[in-house]
Image (cartoon, rainbow, N blue to C red):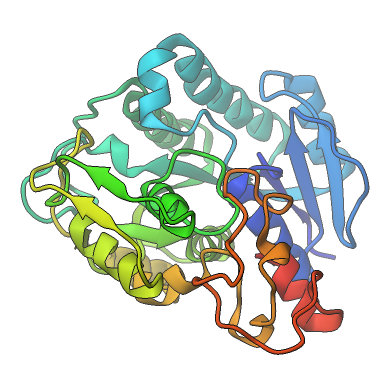
Length: 349
């Protein structure tokens, strides 16, 4: 019988997608979180605990026969780290060290460690895994630290830790600061979105579903030429281009973004050929496909009403106007997602 997969931060944004995807394919999953969670979906066990609690972690690994870990738990935004540098470093670097040590003590070799585009800092030109690491925020420093720790644990202790440098994650249900959601929100309310500068800033957006799939591919991988991979969702787009795409989806949207660059790191196009070669990763949700689904609507479940995508589903998004310009009008739409597989897909969004 295959061992279980433990997901740290399984109640978080990416963690929820991971837990769901792993359970759907039949894995036994342990969702490890500092917050309490009630209920246990089929194939999923919730465990409350801290990353710093090595006895708790070792016991969880042993009791649930964990043989792989996907580590998503973190203070996960560079801007927040500027205000909270010590908290960010303690959670991300120190917490990850405790997790690695607990895994070593329990004999768990494979850990997928979530790093970030912020590890690179500013990069003029293409970004490969061999580009220099020059982080510009405390958050970026913590991600470089976890990668260095990964290498040390691999070399000294025979571990098999893989780090994924993930770009700007977007998708439905995100409660962290995220620029696409921040543009869509006023557009749905009939309000203008105005930024004086930033339109020339390049972004590599990656859908949360692609991030989860990349992590699972890494957890399952057998033969690799490296242990660090770039993960992104396709071609680079400027913020102005993204705003235009959103405007095309929401008739009447007023989106004004001035020229220039944002305060975030400026980077060139990303190379993800190593992830394609070693992990079999290829993004399936490029921005032009993912944007229309930002409110959780899959093609087979495009029957949601405005009430079904209201604040009760995502408190960070306002209720959609009725009729909602972001969703096509359909006859007979009710206030709840349909039952069966379509309803499950709607709720998963």
